Length: 198
Image (cartoon, rainbow, N blue to C red; front, side, top):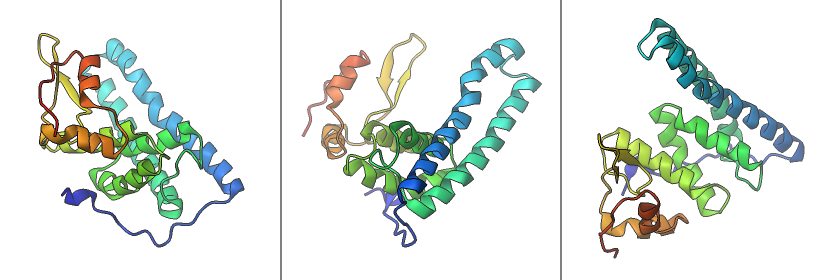
């Protein structure tokens, strides 16, 4: 149905031993810190220098260069060991993989999304993170999302979902990966939801 997310075969994947897992856990947690650090500082930097300043242009250039380096380091791990779930590494280290993929190239997102889905279906990664990964790929490509994880606000501050593919089946898709019903999310976000599910 969604060709870009078709499963690839990784014949070189090996299962790490305990010592390797400890090392990978530390490595991933460090990469997560690096991935997040500048993103936690950008609002303060914008206040100080201005959104369209030369300083902020340089700020985001540094972030972009760092993202590429971190992405390459993560790819080496994924190519060797596959998607490491919470049975292998800490929840933070597992989240690091998703977070870095979120900030990676579309090619990398599309290549490794199937590995994350496998991990989610084994209850070794978080369904909401997978849903956000896939939905953001689709929304950024001006396509309808499939899990309803992405919302937007109008000029009056009212929240709504970005367009959802066949919204009458969204709960079925959400259930397949372990997510709760869209009605609960809509209520939480103060969004009116009237579409009957099939």
